[in-house]
Length: 261
Image (cartoon, rainbow, N blue to C red; front, side, top):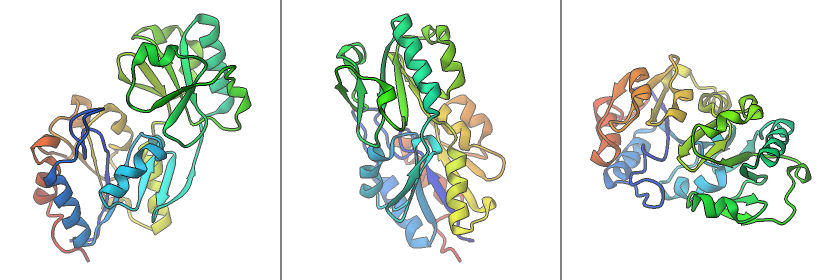
């Protein structure tokens, strides 16, 4: 077995239970230990902000991570950097939200907190994904960088936002959408460049639509049994559900517990 570069999404892949009830199956924890013992390179690969994912990274014994939808890279526990969104385009989006009465929030720092101009964002979403802090007079122009933005609305109301079409975004909750980078393959390739790795030795594990960006033909793609149809259609291997020993089963079937050279 040649050394592999393994990248794991968090929610629905490593973690079961959904937002607010997240837990890591014991078989997943054991599989990760065996993979590390076998000599493979392990990394988390998530859309979450680095600050929101670092605790689970450390809990599972990872030292490397692709975060922020592919635009954040952590190697050997050190954050090398996060590429922000196009600041002018985010400002244009917020201006349009104000004009049309949409509820919005921004994330100008790598933290577990988003900023909103008032309490309406939390009152509308009751979100537990991250903290929401109301900042009086909030203006995105006052921040040098903008990592993410959020718009609270039900689908398909976002179609009325013309400036949103100029930005990457996705929806995980019915109450609001995330304006964030969505190119996990970009971050994976950054890590490969750092270690001079071969794309043919990469194996990615995912379940949701935002994982499509790392389900590419250049490497091996593993879909969880609970994955969406779009992910399964692009997968090289489909394993069991995340809460049915899915990670363990995939690694066992792919021979990844064998000692790597």
